[in-house]
Image (cartoon, rainbow, N blue to C red):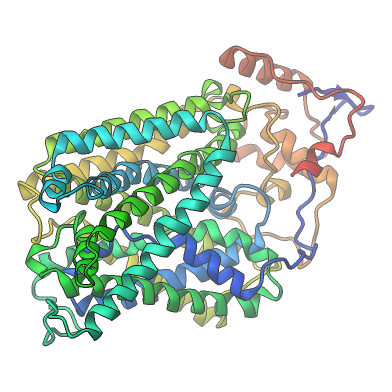
Length: 587
């Protein structure tokens, strides 16, 4: 980053754009379009078989998870995303409320959850691939073969990663087609086949006398229901579109309601369709969806169409994985450039792809995939990875709730694009219900399910506890080890409101309603982040507003040299004739 001295002796730096809370976003997303975005982002078919074992009781679990997780979490994410609209997503929300340590942890947990998700979803893809062959007895044996599953998981993942090195365009196309032909169409077909099967008078295997309410006395039998919370994951990604809605305060809650009804219809209809044709005792977490397609098509005299459905679902998994491989790591890269990752991990190739981070991600996935070797079965490996990703995701959710509560207290005068309805009562109700739901799901995730063989219960819990502990602690180790030279001088990440105001995140803002900081205030906050006032510390954030203290070019030069030495390359310089507002406009 090029620097030059000002007449006052300070350092001229292109000023990031001032917060845009006063600007009215252009309404480009309708209420219906937002509902569709939520549905397509959340709906996946891989978990339906795990709930089919509960029969009609699965309806209770789906509705319960929607009410205590999806609805409150959607409302909270919508308020945060529509208020703090600058780049960063959940990292910005959490850092605005809790400080950079917790913001970095939340961002890392989202990435880590996806990394653990990869082997689990690819195991499902491997089983789907096995069922494109003939006959079904061969399919079942192949699907349960550990070596076959390991080869497919690692093969598909690394081929998708190498394809990603070429850029995002091909991955986005594959993802779009995979979402349509690998998820939406198969889901609709499954529900329609279930209805036809029922109308034809065929025998069904769901116990018609089964209660809608679960039997809470059998604790180990309701453990699989905890995974439903992960079915509804992803609202923090869709919430960033809320500012693009017309009248979000009225439209977004309606979009959530429409989406919840559609999602519940798909999940419940698909789950019951599987339960109609497969007895509860024979349900397999990975294979039963494919077996259900075979049986449902066989009832119509065309069993070979079951193999076609397996091919479509496999295609859907590959499409989903191809784009998700880069998405979370792209966020990690942006945040890493702000000083949270070593410079060598901040490099990109000529296509703008974060190759070093993808290599690290691939190593993680490869190690996790080896769970196939040490656990009793493909099904048990799938279960433990699913529960581990659920726990880590729910910890991230709890951090977001914490940030939401803190920001309601510390930044009460900030104009919200959308506000959780109901005033103080609505805030308390939404947070209480959401936090309790997340905690219940986390506890259930630690209990070995009685329906599948997971080996020794002690080993199962030990793997979960140690694995989660390592992943949950890791971002704090990285944060503690970070150095001033990690911050990329060319980062475009904009300062946080508390930095601009010169206060710590736990202090209440003194800005009046509608206040917009000046470009000079934003510039000084950015320079403080760059270390222009000396070592960056919460103890020195007040210097941002102390005009008697001027930024020091020597400090800036030292940090730039440290970055250059650590990365092995010289950072790009801003041309002298460049418009000072150019960097800001790109944001």
